[in-house]
Image (cartoon, rainbow, N blue to C red; front, side):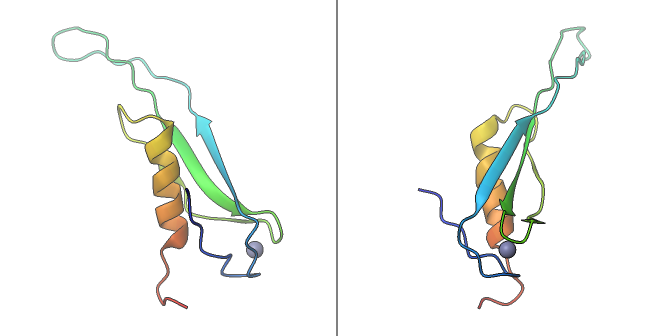
Length: 82
Ligand SMILES: [Zn+2]
């Protein structure tokens, strides 16, 4: 279960998460072997006030799920916990 903190601007709790698969890039390593580079990005947003949280970029080899988890961590990170 994914737990979002409420929106820091409007207090909204009806939050959404968007994740997108980015186009794969073709890379070749030192041995001449293809290593496709595929990643996801994801962010939490608040449809009440149209605020977007920080963009979480999945690193090489990651799939969609860690990107979504990171997006929630970034959304939930606050300088002062209220
Ligand atoms: Zn909001």
